Length: 251
Image 1: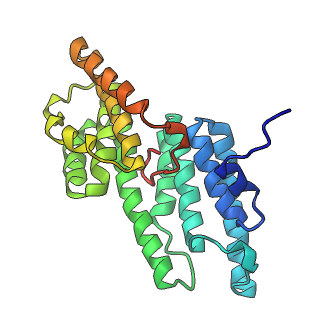
Image 2: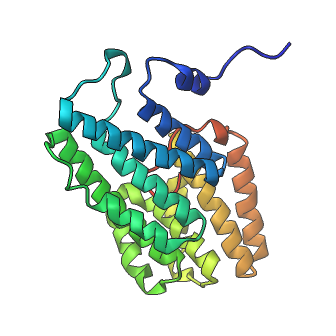
């Protein structure tokens, strides 16, 4: 007889009290973690379709939502997240021009009418994500001239520093750059001390990129040390139970 127990994630997705938009949000994060881009793309389209229907209904009839299915976020959030999700999918597939199209969409959500203070906060937040992810796409597509500017940007924005270094070394690995001047030994120790799960996942991803980078630079001993650190850190955490998905281009 099969195991009848369900995970918290399955219970959440099956609950009648969770709004379909929030279920879509969780489904996208699940498919992202599994690298299932075809399904992630369908979910992202569904989020945007549901958000548009809800917005049109709200414009016509007002804010009528069943009490057992209240949204976790302002409705504008799901437009921004849907566009961001699409940009991530195209970025991961190397379709950088398509990614830029959707970055432009969540960079400008000013068309949203009857905004509240909370809506305006979300609009501004997605503008910030668009700046960071625009840099990421340009670097990954080979624009090395932006490297110094991006490095200065992430150093001024604490939330962007760790994921930003992942982008820098991923871009170096994809484009076969030598970027030793951006090496981060002094900050790596700080990153290793982060205890929250989201940053631990970022830290593991950074170790992976650093290992690849040093292999590419033929520094095999250093690369092995990063691989060992990666394995040691990864075994202490269940990466697939990680429930944090960054609004950056990495989750």
